[in-house]
Image (tube, rainbow over all chains, first blue to last red):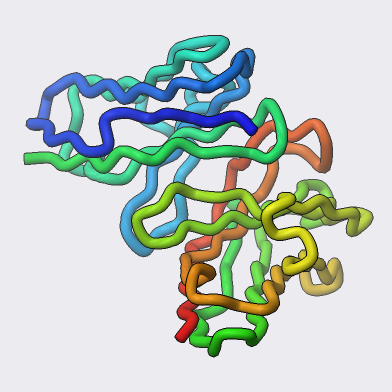
Length: 107
Length: 121
């Protein structure tokens, strides 16, 4: 099973900040990494596919990078509406596994 | 626009079973697999299994093998997840999610349901 170590667990940002979230895989997963945003009581939203491709309709302030074992989600010029829980998912092998998640608070 | 809508919250006693539904709309149901994932309080998301919505083939996480059954009704564009022999540790929010592909290889999940809270007490 591939373990994903996501950090930080919590972060507080000011509007306009650049935010980075890390997800490290316990083995090489190529670019089989997706990122999601979830707000309380709502369905998760797919934001980054295959490590670095922005999902259509997602604002370009979101970006993803990485390959192999180290991946990063970046939010540039963060906005108040970006307050949410973010998590990574590896789909390279079964069982699919997830990072622990990051709660992003906007001050 | 593709959407998955899940059934409402459930309260079950230990030892009972729960069946959660996931109704798809806005796309051709049989063209994408459906996964089930759960998140217990304070825990990370956990994959339970998936179903090929076209032919009904399923695969399950070893952790849930023997306790989970995933089915689908193509006429209703609905997938189901039944978990039996419930224990306190099964209290969680259960999500269905659509795969970007019909079956293996998976390309990951793109559309999610809103989640169904299952309480075991």
